[in-house]
Amino acid sequence: MEQTSAKVNVINEVYIRKVGIQLQTSEFAKLWSQLSKDYKVHMESELAPVLTESQLTVLEVIMERGTMKPSDFIPYLATSPAAVTMLLDRMEKNGLLGRERDSVDRRIVWVSISEKGKQEAERGVQIRDAFLSTVLNRISSHNQQLLVYLLGKITANTKVV
Image (tube, rainbow, N blue to C red; front, side, top):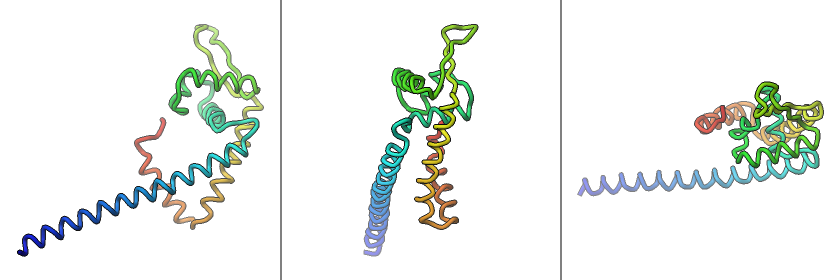
């Protein structure tokens, strides 16, 4: 009788942990979705009409890494080569960047940021920082550090290098 009772207790504990994990993942999904939606809505409205979030990403990457080939942007944007080309076309048309053929190998195109692109990147970063500061200031400095640490742990295998 005691063995059966012990087995039932173990089964109950496993079930409770499983349900607890499901509740945690469900709650995490809801919170993450809400924060992501709020972020996207804010960024879209504040960056418009000059920038989109994808364009801000391109500008930030160029500022960090310097002149790049269009194919180099694919991992940062998680999109197709055709979509990157269309995005770069719009950005060049709006004066955010320039494209130039390589002097040695004409098949290679180099993308560089313009002065207007630098100004818009700075504006975009300020908009993002202001939003995230507002969100993060709802919790203590210690909890902000903990949140960043924990997010780093769960995204460690998904980072673009």
